[in-house]
Length: 172
Image 1 (tube, rainbow, N blue to C red):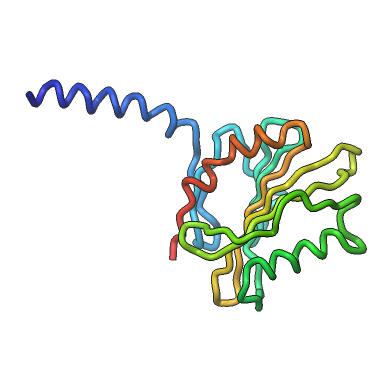
Image 2: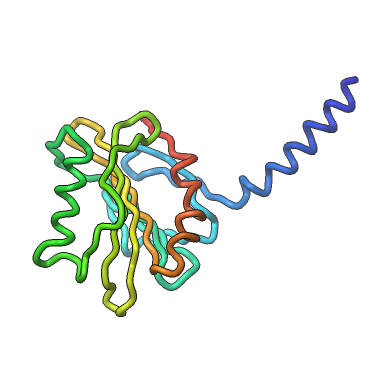
């Protein structure tokens, strides 16, 4: 009886290994969170800083970036996201900025947040789509996660990066 069970467990583990091997674990430099990133996405040290971590995907225009925002004095994540997006559509913002969805309330591993999707005309002339999720942490901090890609590939990029939200863990 024990042997067949051991064989089933070994087979289950072997089947799960490829899914685990397809991702890398990323831990925020400030120690606020960790998540999984698809292995083919590359950390961009030159584009990153203590509060910003940037990963480029395998395509020409796809990326994901994580920002620790501070100081944040808002207590409502939707209000804060409206405020942040107003800077993207205002003077000096993104060309031809357009809201696609939201902002709406969201939860990120038990922390209240908000999400919104928008698009804009990138410097190369194509239409770039972004999904932004913001979580308010208190202590005058927020974390922002942004998925970005050109219009034609955005749905596939969002699907490839679903693991980022699924594997998200707060470290506090």
